[in-house]
Length: 163
Image 1 (cartoon, helix red, strand yellow):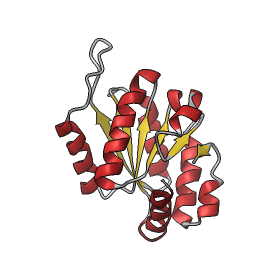
Image 2 (spheres, helix red, strand yellow; image 1 turned 90 degrees about the horizontal axis):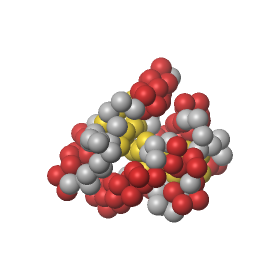
Image 3 (spheres, one colour; image 1 turned 60 degrees about the horizontal axis):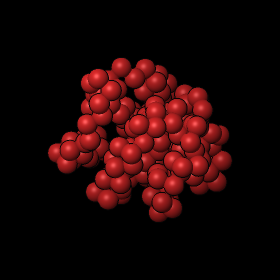
Image 4 (cartoon, helix red, strand yellow; image 1 turned 180 degrees about the vertical axis):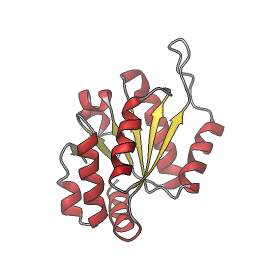
């Protein structure tokens, strides 16, 4: 985890933060739209990714092809941070699979946010690089601004972000 955060700090200092905010099994996720709009208004590159949709409360597991397609988007858009929006505990196992895949295939840092990580932060931080707790718009904006400095002390002191 530490090496991914150190890489992210260096990368963002020289090449700007470039985020992918991923909605898991929810194409109507307004939180992702609000977070992305807030960051774009501040001048940051953000890609919204709507990863699968649920049908009748069924969360079909991500296939290898779908995981590789997600990795292709991350590479194509030259993202340096992936943020997963996890609205409920039912999504946490899939988020874990996606995070592990992104770590193993791209070695990219992953931040979890949403209702589940806010309520179950202690569990979630064991499974990802960072957790965003609580309301995310201003906290994520502060975090991304701190990333831009490349200063690890500022990054680690970002409000509402657990490492």
